[in-house]
Amino acid sequence: MKKIEAIIFDLGGVILDIDYNLTKTAFEKLGATHFDKMYSQAEADHLFARLETGDVKPGEFYAEFNKRSDLNLSPGQISGAWNAMLLTFREESLDFLERIKNNYRLFLLSNTNEIHYEVFKQIYHSNERSFAFEDYFEKAYYSFDMGKRKPDADIFEVVLQENNLNPLTALFIDDSIQNIEAAKQLGIQTIHLTAGMLIEDIGI
Image (cartoon, rainbow, N blue to C red; front, side, top):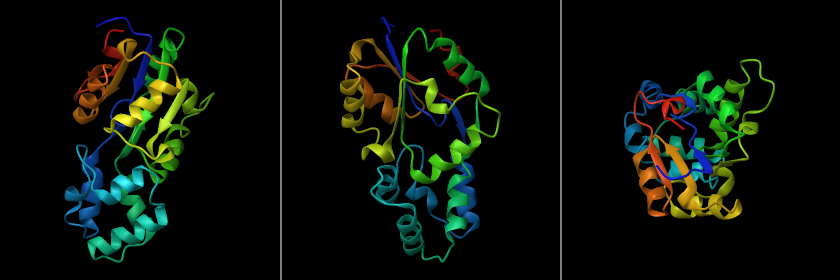
């Protein structure tokens, strides 16, 4: 690996533990038997992609989900199933961020949505904290705020350009291969965090 000056972290599966199967199972129990065709780690259909870029607000999302699923679920039922994938923050990984933030410029780049954002903030603060989650980073970028989502090249370009980052000395860490490949196309160094890998063990 070449010289690294900045590190761009994904959130889910990298710092925050998630389990897509919990959401899939929760929706199936509610009668949405084809949820895995609508959303997975590898791909989001048009409705979920629009949710992640902020083009669809939660209320609109709930109504459209019911329409497409031919169900009549309450917002609480849908949000509960949708949030089921969100587990806990890895304390060792948070400690790692704290240790390295004086040695590298740290950024967060997450495909997320307004519904998940509110819940993972609550999860983070379920333990006593001395500062906000975003304070680990020079800047945190969320897709629903940006109107863009990974793996589209323009979301990476925004992070690089706004912060005057050289892609050749930037490292991107993500658990989804399609996002890793997109970053590579821009010349960014990458680490694909596969099952069992932890950011504190990557050797930087």
